[in-house]
Amino acid sequence: MVGACATASREVWMPTFAPCRRARYGVVSRARGMMIVRPYGRCTVKGPALTSGFLTRSPCMHIIAIGDIGVTDQMMHIGDEAMFEALVDEMRARGATAITGLSAAPRESAVRYGIDALPRIGFAPARAAGAERFAAVVRAIDAGGGLSADDPFWAVRDAVASATGVVIAGGGNMASTWPLHIFERAALARIAAAAGVPLVVTGQTLGPELTPPDRVVLGEALRSARVVGLREEASGRLAAELGVPGDRARVTLDDASFLGWDDPSGDSAGGAGAAGYTLVSLSTHLGGRDRRAIVRGLAHLLDRHADETGQSTRFHAHWGSLRSGESRGDAILHDEVRAQMRTPSDVVPTGDPRAAARLARGASLLVSGRYHPVVFAAPAGVPVLALSADDYTRVKLDGALGRWGQHSVRDLDEIADAGTGAAGAGMDAAADALRGIHSSAAQTRAAAARLRPGARAAAADWWERVAEALAP
View (cartoon, rainbow, N blue to C red):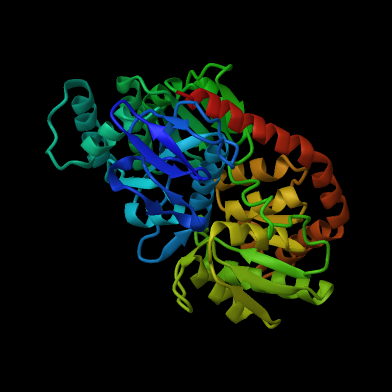
């Protein structure tokens, strides 16, 4: 059985269970076994009702979406990919018929998500070069020239012009630490505004560091959006400072909080003891602290916890290589900690976001310096010891845990103190914190179970609002 997307000039046929995409590539395979075609521009679906529940005669929703996606050199950043994957899932479930992603590795992202993909506009990491490039892009938007014919800007501009909506997908990079990401997203927002295409911003952490010039650029971009999702109350307050109207801003959960939750293999009841493992996901960002002291402190802490609980210890890198047996990214720090431990531990390969979510939700306890292991684990009621390196990581971790009644973010200084060997106070403080988190596991799981129905309903309502804002 097939349906058809009708445009002004042609019909493109497709299987009824598949979303339509732009037709210039004909029929192609997409992830998870679906066969799809790509109709150009706005279209209506004709024929039998789609088995996935899409309306049969509504305009096609074609979204341009940017996230920090694209696996290059086989290095996967699970959190960034997870937020984009959640966006794709939620928008397809609400009638999106075509999604074009802006990616660092367009070919890889196209295959991974079954979407069309383009290179990002592109900005240099250095602030001065990025600002110069942003000014040139703004001139091109306003005047239609000034950039070379092969500049990636033109493909992005044309894609936006043919779309029904633009989405800045979830992330934590709208901060002066990464000016290139502010410039990239602000440029996309300007392109959307110039084309009269609605913009939505989902699941963001703002700042906390924002220079006055970045406030101007980011504020203009956010104010141009129909709706803005913020991951923490602190980000919500900052959005208000930047002039985002209150009726357009909403404090939400991270977009990937329930990624894969309803998958057949995605049982997410939490690690109530059957699995019996402590999951460890560390970040190499230590805020300038003594790395050797951190490594020793973590090794001592994990050994002590294993002795007291009998749980096994598993390490999982959220920024790591997809090549079997290759240690890069966070895995390097993991190896250093494991080498200092006297109790056994094992390594879970980096894998993909859905597998990472299952792993975190199945743990008996999580120790993490990374954000998305916490995002995955907390809704399942997994007790978490979160390790903060600076104000930025604390804002994110406090936000992710506080929504689920957990308040267990600890400063990495405690771990460093525990690893100095000069005194026992640091180790005692860290060990006592971990012991308390573990001993309150039953209450933590019960609290998450009480909060989860409301949180899931709120998340669904948010995605409905996003889809409504993007609907043609």
